[in-house]
Length: 458
Image (cartoon, rainbow, N blue to C red; front, side, top):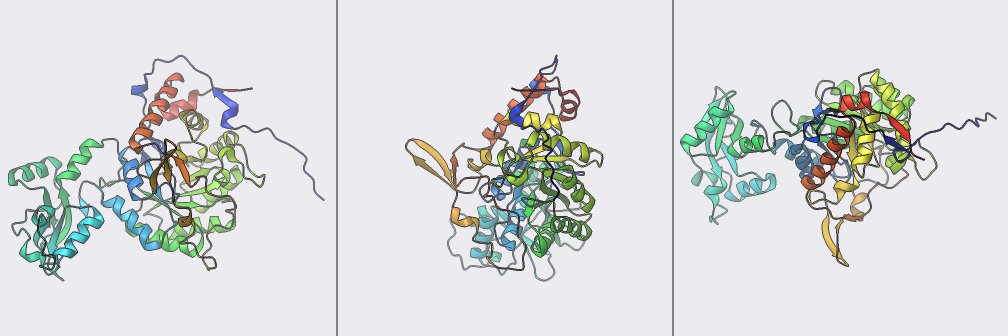
């Protein structure tokens, strides 16, 4: 019987401290821009976890506006997950691509339902099947109107201001000001509706200057999948809805099924979506996923704080990130820390040792934007997540391979301390992170990794 009695030393983030250095860097001068994947940058190194107690469209929109990215969880039917992605991509942008429309014969009730569902204030009215624009109906047209069976054609504005192709933001603003309108409809040479420009979107572009956006000005969004056919179906449908990055989330991703899932997604959607794969704890595991086509590697065994599962397996996170970052650097692939980020101290040490971003779960689960309700108990406020929802969409027996390695519960309790709005929590983390980087004399994350010096805390 083979016996390996060698015991290697390994460290957690609590076992080390960063050595302060001479610095002329002020916290406000620190840049937090970083790589999420090979081809996607974000402006703060924070990812809202793909858990049903953390991220749906509300969280994904809010964190992307602040410069990070959210991962829509997959504990929901495929159609619902696609819709959550679509809501993020439609939330704002330079233009609304392929906007939601109604026909002249649609009822007022249908128009109101679409506006409420998608949280929008206006709909182009198009003929069927030509798709030519014949009007526009807005919430202003429907104000105080209660005959919901009436057709849209009786209330819509027929003098629609249309533009063709790309239009400069300044020109769009000038047109809206001159015509005293809030929306411009983009049409092609045949007069068919292809997009929409709104005054609210222009205002948001100015307000959220550090937002994580794609080439069209839309907010970035990620989504989680597991393994097998379900993962391929979800990825294909969400990519068609505009998904930027898919997270192949497995508690123990060092297995052939995880690598095969990454490989097949890469082959089918090579130019359309980036792939983050994990979780892993060793360089060999990271190498297998990179060979399969992963664009970023997520580190954190079983999602448990400190990198250890209740079964006794794992690698302390500081050592795990350090080893995997060295392996990934040779392939130009970023590392993402998943688990244990409860304060800026852990975050700055993770970035210094080689991670380029980090997944946040518990801190964000207590915010207004996370799913769940706020309840008060003995003078304290808590965010409550419905524990019955955790498995309601996961069949007990199916051909779908969900995650055979998931033996630990999610790293979120069914109740967490209420923390208010996500903007406040992110600002606190980001301010502390900038201060920590200034202690190291680092103007950005790359410089932090070059200058960082650690000591063992005994």
